[in-house]
Length: 198
Image (cartoon, rainbow, N blue to C red):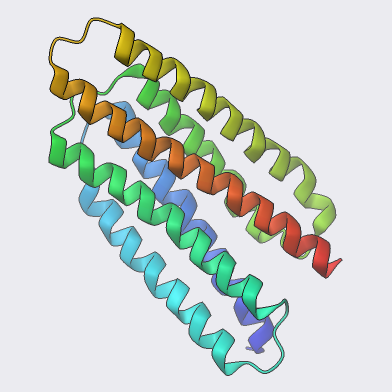
């Protein structure tokens, strides 16, 4: 397989792992069960793909896009999976149950963002197809911000039976918001790469 095609194949593989990870995190939040073992496996798989992209970049004289962009995109996609795995790990660590509706809603935003990121990666070479996908990721990030603000307001102004729950969910909401912020950052990076390649 030509090396240029291999880059796109590896990015599509990484995009699919992002989508699967965020869908699995969303499912676990919705159902209130642990998905940490599966997310840990997905995080390892994504690390492997990212390293394969790094190595291919170092071995390739002429890359299909700027080497710095390739490395940054691979790293940024991997960061999303790392954050999702951290959310799942801390839910287990904190024994954070039951899961509030706001966290479930953030999980749904993340699952939708994951599907959009996979679609954006598949259209990396077609900047015209990227517009609606990137717009939707930005919309989801704004929705995630709104949900997080409401969740934190309720957390600090509501009737919390135990202060420890406030500490747990404040940390988890911060992590969930950071994960969706990273999705938006990846969308902006994809947009930049597409403009450069046009």
